[in-house]
Length: 166
Image 1 (spheres, rainbow, N blue to C red):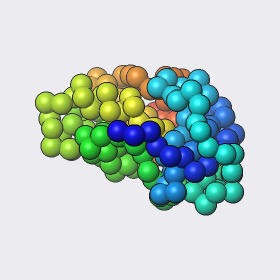
Image 2 (cartoon, helix red, strand yellow; image 1 turned 180 degrees about the vertical axis):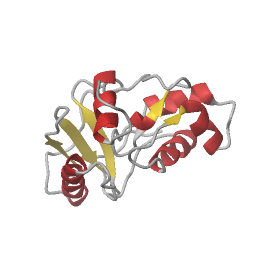
Image 3 (tube, rainbow, N blue to C red; image 1 turned 90 degrees about the vertical axis):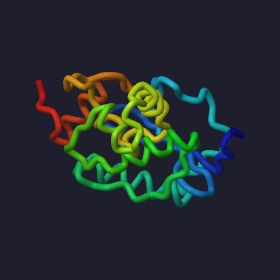
């Protein structure tokens, strides 16, 4: 797979730390916290917060931080395998305030035995928050793996009302 050709990038503030956004001409391709795991070291693209996909994403993030029920409608262009895309699409179906498990996602995509592969695809999600991998918990309901860190996962779930503070 060829590396993506990013058209533009920008940075936005969030209550959980700065986010780097990058877009191709087709859509938003990256949303990463500075200290996130599996993050590209450098995005080759000019800083252009006025780029249509980046500007829309920034507006939608602002709406999400005001009201967790806000939906992201910005066009997306994540780079990945067909299996990863199937997993990421299943994640997009998870409504704010809901939770799922790796096993449930595996069943949703018709691959019930592929729980570990689903976990790997979720771990490589390039569009944190927009593709809500933070809504996936361990089978026993425990907070497990989140590239942005478990404290952020907990904060996102609390913001959405899917987890009580404490």
